Length: 100
Image (tube, rainbow, N blue to C red; front, side, top):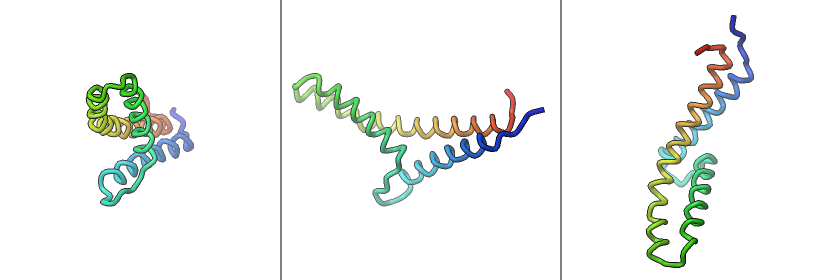
């Protein structure tokens, strides 16, 4: 018999809900609405790209690196949304006692 863990269900549900709201606020809302998850991912990716671009003072090198920032950041934001839903959903299923 599997036990139900209501705390895990609530935490997992909150993660899924927050991830979904982040996606909606970023993609659907027409004005510049800021979602925490999106800001965190973009800040991390931007920091990495600035660090790599700062390795050389050559403008063409820095421009070539920073030109790839936006497409890679968008893909990583989508990956963060998928990861949030997967982790939150997994915690919900674990809390419900669903086996493998």
